[in-house]
Image (cartoon, one colour):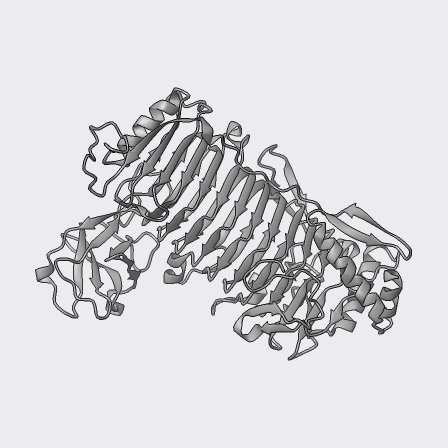
Length: 640
């Protein structure tokens, strides 16, 4: 029945019974998620595995094996003293003292927990490698806040200022260095300045200083000096009670070569360093949370914000550190100077209900929000990862970026909007990669972007085989909604586990039950290459293996929104859906050497999906939507 319906659609008819049957089986297909697709013959149907990604399981830690618990209270508890025993009635004053006790237990294979009371702690939670530098015990170590977001690990120290010397409307000199050069102008290496809890924006040169900003001025001569000047925000008067702080610690939480670690409920902020150039001997990155060569780690209900570098970095180099999984749950990585989350050389990563938004503020300040820059998420070399309900909003860079050597990638029910350059980018990844139930909208281009160079698309794919896109809404992006970059083949990838070189190209892609929606004539729906940027080689292998069908396309402003490009013309005049189907079929047949009769998009439709208020970013489906049974996401990112 369905096969016959498809034949009628190719001829221009739309039989209601075939459409109803397609929608009915779509419901069944949704019930079977993840991992199976529904294949129909005229008289029967069967279930076969599609590009299947085994979901990651993440960390497995037995908290019941915790034996000793140590308490910290910096908020003035009666008996808070580092000479006490760390009990609830006689807590320690500093985290360091409690952590030393807990690590002695862990190194003796005794499970330990550190509970940190509310308050601001101006120290780094430093968990060094085991003393023998080889292997950690199996005992769990738990570091948690007594109340979520009320335990603040602040990497900034308060600077003592002479408020009496400040004059209303005039800059205040808050820091001075002798014989330190900034080497001119705006830089990511400038200090991180915080006034009464608000991070001040850097402005250069000093003549551009505005209220609520700071600038760095140099004087040259026999006694060169570098000064940091600031103006308070509008309506804020600097007084002796004003708290001015400068980031002085490179991380708020650092864990090295440990396993079976849980971090819960902390707020970490302001990782930076106060000088204008990296001091010799400093190798640690500027990052809120630094997890290196660790396995079986659970991070949940943690907020890492306003750090000079990434909010969270997880990397491994030691092979023995990859045996256990990593789990992130309800982790918020927002307003960081670099990416929200960076990772490399990881296995079995489970990410659920996390947010990476408003990141790369340093890039935005310096005008470097470009294609090579940070992102909400930017990871490389992740073998087996599942991302559920990830939120990436308004990053000054891409939203979600898997930048190479990622396998078994599963992304479900993500919300990705208002980022720069692209919402979601899968680059040089062996796959399989499955993206389903995601809402990818309103992503945009920086004013200085050159589309013919960056080749942006809201969903951007490059040299990655076995990619499946299904049940996604890709709409209202100020760039093509779906695009394939013109890289025919990449040979620069390396499998981080085996060291084997990777040769990858975009092939065996499956696109099903996606809604591609444009709001104006400039918002093209699909942009595919016909040659690489050097004009060498074509993409016959891509079209010959493309399985794209039963998608919905719509742009009320223009029907000619299907485009191809090559090195001579980034954006050619667009085609309507009928011409696009003809183009795809011809290229599919050519890629098969003229054999077969493949018809990509034969069952796809050109119709209004009937979103609630797309102009306002509300992409819920109206009750009468023709896609109501497709299981598409709402504006909240939850599958209907």
